[in-house]
Length: 146
Length: 313
Image (cartoon, rainbow over all chains, first blue to last red; front, side, top):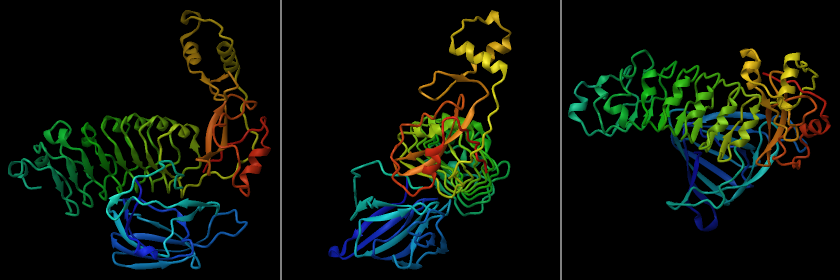
């Protein structure tokens, strides 16, 4: 029902390598990368990446878009917290998309941001599967992605 | 499609003719009794006769479970597919739909409905009559409001509404307890109240009707003209649990911000019988976790007697 994160390799604790599968219309929230490097490569389909400025400390308004681009098959992208925040989405209504992600060092939580207000909220990141095996969720209830 | 299709491949279960430039799917399909999945994305379907007549009654109409017509040129949901009573998954994403026909409710087995990326402006309440609907995608359309009846979709687990023209949501959306995913970004959701004292006082008829109902004044259909009997039957109960009042036409539309899952504040609209009533949305989180959110100061200072005008568009 939403994009899935599938862990492929955890590099002896030095990195997380995972494959994300995006159905039609699936998108992520605006998020940061918890001080890690993040590499992304499109394996299938297209993904739109929208970059945002970090919200002001006392900020209470709409977040500022820096730029957006559509990444095509085999294209790569890189981001870290000093570059900014981003939202990644499959804007196609007819094709699914698949991307390969490398995070170093690995992290299992990050902040998601409400585009209208800039308020952040820490979330734990979960895997749909790990090394080919389905990961059963501990808790089914989590905040909706606005 | 080749004319001999059902003769050569009578056991066909999955047919994918996506991206082939087809402008119509003809009667060659009808006699495929094992076909459960038909994928015809990214073609030139959309004109009259894109789908064969009698689709619902034909053998293929009974077997079909998955139909993907995304990326075509449909300006309306093709009537021929409304007879597919066994259909579980339908995608019409990325077409040119301006609306959803109420007859959509005839797709009794539908679990997955993808209508993202069209020009849909409103949702018929009949959509709520699909008992098995679990996954509903309406993103990237021009939808201005959600009918409260959608809260009757008890099986709904995922609702995608991002990138539409919603300014508020109906209060009933809180009843979707099985909902696991809800996307609302890219809507001009109301963030602030507009403090406007507009309230049309109730008519004498309304005041009399309210008195009859709240005091249980007995009456029989023979006591009153038919139009008044009908009028009295339309009384709505004030949602304020502390108020036993009813209202007919004169009500106060109020927007109340409700914490959803304790984290997000959504503007929900509901009706109250009078300005003295207060909102029933007390089930939501009371604590204001985001102290810097300016709406909280609006909410705190709104007295029971103030009325808010719905901020539209």
